[in-house]
Length: 224
Image (spheres, one colour):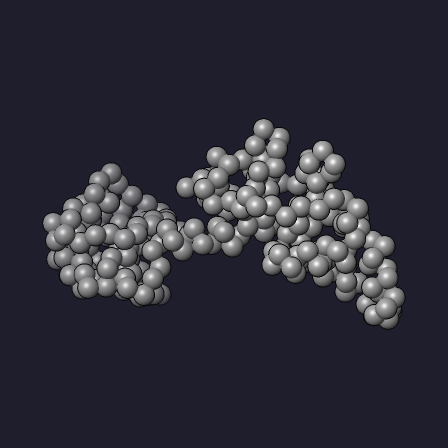
């Protein structure tokens, strides 16, 4: 999936001279975590998060009264605290690439640009929602894991076994086992009524199925 499919396009923007008090009120009213700062030509010049605002609130709070603090914050503007070195992406960026960028740069939102125009924003919450949908997390399914060798056709073999039983695979995710190179976790979800049938069929076919976390994977490793 690409960012353009899930990004927020109803953007909340403010000019650089917006006071911190006003910025706080906008974030609270719109129930968002980031404000996009644009200049008079609608060009993106910065990003302010609710965390940035909270830090600005807290820093002088020990020495100023509430009245003095409120007065000071009305004089401060978002261009004084906004992040100016902005990491952006385009609508055709994949979700997994966006997630990696957020992790590497330790940021929680990415503005989306197309032809130098601000067209959207995506957050870690959006990425998490896509992930949860991808793995099919719901109460009417059964989750299990099969450790398989990294070889051509292994996924097709598993799929064929379930196809013959007319069992639909709701989700399938793979990731490498770090302690055992060449081995992958094949994590699957099927409808709850078919859970036991799927596990039994795969077991009979020679696959070792894990239903829950196990500390020692040795008994579940596929034979070479």
